Image (cartoon, rainbow, N blue to C red; front, top):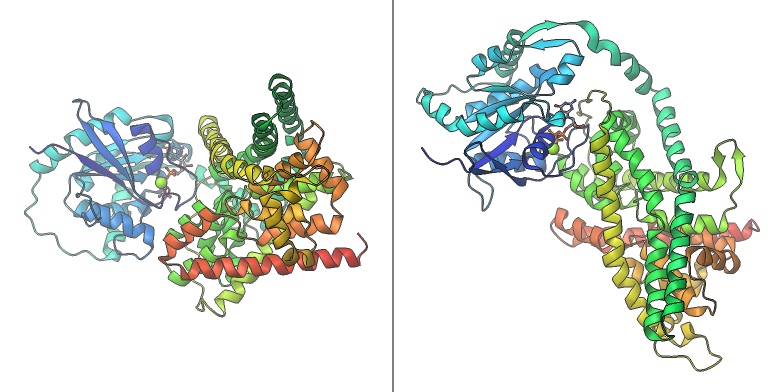
Length: 617
Ligand SMILES: Nc1nc2c(ncn2[C@@H]2O[C@H](COP(=O)(O)OP(=O)(O)OP(=O)(O)O)[C@@H](O)[C@H]2O)c(=O)[nH]1
Ligand SMILES: [Mg+2]
């Protein structure tokens, strides 16, 4: 007997493959309650009862082996052994959603027909039970001719049995007769067989799974649906401001105290200034936004886990279709609210190449979480914290408006692109709706921790590096007595040279300067401003509150609004550009993307500035 080395998880999207993968290998792959979450192959290690390690591969969900979307292509290639540099898996684990048996059995048959040793994980039996479904795994095993193990991936039920079955899959398969020629089976035949097998495996079924149909009637209603979605988003942005404030203030006070400690314990000079002006003022000004990021992601993760996110996609489908995008673009665009990078990668689940390209090109317009610190500091500094109504603050409304501006911008750009450079018909919506689920607290906390960690790691690496470099460029050469340090410095000279370009749209010198390092990441705009003002000022208070005070005192409202408008559009993120290059296989489209986004940013910042000036703001 050959030794089992590699096994792969296959099955329809949203069957729980990644949840099983995490449970079996201890990995932390993203799982979420909608199809199309995994778009790449991921490998992990599983240990068999015999003590032998097996490489387990998590794959993107797939409906069939003959489909066109790039993520399904990955699954096909890995399973068939066509994936470059990778041997064919020795065994396959087909993951089925027990409560969606008939649908999931269509692809399962196709997988089993390959003749590779196969085990079926009958997953989500808890949900099947909730829906009043009683299943007979033995009958299913009999009909499919492979072992069937009931599992609940998220509660770690059935894992030992599944691992044992994977361990003996090859021996079992070898005992089966493989010599019989397999007839070619058509899709309708497979559907019929799937339906018969499912009927044979379902012992009893109650009508309980109608409970959630009522909820769908409201949430997917043509009028209430969009209104509810808008209301949900509105609440999120109110919460981002209202709930985060005490935590952000505490963090800022902490940074201030730290700065004070450094000032009183270190001798005056280069090192002390680097730490207080560059690291604490600069990097600290970004870290202070951690509570807002966490609150934003808590909502996003909740929406994903409950199944509401997929409903939101459904609700948006009509609007998306009217600008030439399909509902399939919604999940990638929604992911872009976290960050455009996973958003652009998620477009791999879009089969139509022009649809996909359009989605990639507009993804950077979705307001990613890196913009939150920029919006946060400017809004806090120039928009009064007044209440428009109970629980409705003006600052939250402005933040909401900025998010909407990004969405509207993306829709308009998509419409223009779809009738010019990426001309073509929109494809229909084919996403299936996942069931409603109560979120699992542990998964939620892990997700939040991962997001927080990503943010802090950015602060500790890219933002830290960009800020320190800027501080050095701001500190040298030293100014003569009476001269402004910023004016004398290298950075100041660069800013002064660039300023004529940005003066017409209302930018001051500090803003212009911030744009350059902010190409590394948008948050750097905040740390740059903090560092620039810290270098320029004599006082010892270098906290975010101090920066906010400077902006309030020194920026006119039109100038501040122009800066906000700039960041709605500007492609200030090297990583996004790099990912766009990778996903479109060349520089042509990323160059186009950067060009049109900068042009839009300039025009809209200018329009905002002049409109605000004309209104006498
Ligand atoms: N109740 C219950 N939920 C589950 C189970 N397994 C997975 N889930 C949930 O189902 C959803 C989908 O799980 P994923 O692991 O992301 O599904 P996937 O098959 O990897 O999906 P794609 O990557 O899109 O192909 C998540 O919200 C999981 O928490 C289970 O056994 N019971
Ligand atoms: Mg997955």
